[in-house]
Image (tube, rainbow, N blue to C red):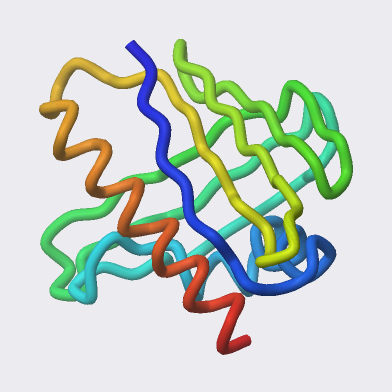
Length: 134
C-alpha cells in the first residue's frame, strides 16, 4: 500500500528544491513533533547517491536513521528513492500559488497507516513553514 501526503510551499521552485535537498535545511525542518529533531543529514543528490537523516528524541530516549538511495532525480521536478525494500517519490509541482510538494511512499507494516500518514504530513507541514520563513 502507498501513502501520499502533500503541502503547498509559497516560494519559487528553486527555493523549495534547495530547502528539500540541502542537509543544513533538512536538519531544521525534518521533524514530526517538537520533542524530536534531526541531528545529522547527508545528501548525495544523484542517481545511485545515498541520503541519510538521523532523527532523535530530544530527551535521548530513542533515535533512528532514515536512509536510502536515489533512483531518479529530475532537477526542480522529481526525486525517486529506495529505502530498504520500500520506495518513495517526491514531486515538485509549480503553480501560481507556489510549489506543491507531494510525497508518495510504500507503507510499512509495523505502525498503523494513519500514524504513518500523520507523521509524514507533520514533517511536510514543518517543511512548508521552514521555506516560507527561511
